[in-house]
Amino acid sequence: MFLGEFTHKLDSKNRIIMPSEFRDDLSDEFFITKGPENSLVIYTTEEFQRQSKRLDELINENKKNRAIKRLFFSSTVKTSLDKQGRLLLNKNLRDYAHIEGEAMIIGNNLTIEVWDVNEWNDYINEVEVNLSDIMDD
Image (tube, rainbow, N blue to C red; front, side):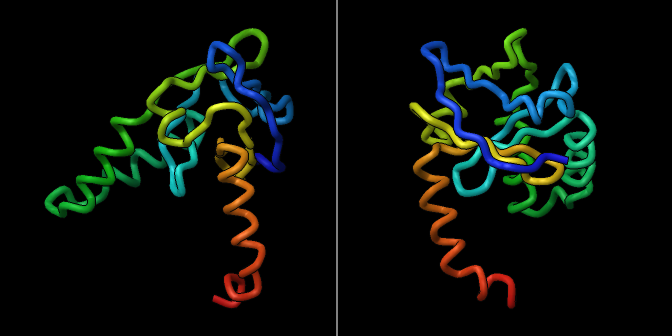
């Protein structure tokens, strides 16, 4: 289970340190892909396999389903942490998430999300203002 939020800077080689609280639950290899609201989502191998199976069950004749599958699988990168616990973010993923300097790494139960710190702050401020309404829905 991944919990909490952590701010880390992108280094000059576009690597970001993974919080130590998350490292033990990530296997040697894991997957990172584009997520909602310009976030990046990190899946453990087990969770990626579950998500892949769920997507494979979508009806391929549906245009929306094909688009979801194409976007998900084409933007996914299989990766690992280096010996210092850093994750390399490629240009495609950095550009999508608008990550240039600081990033917010958050635990989201079975996944990890990586956000540009400013986009995360804007998002969370908007959500917190409407929290009562969101919880009522």
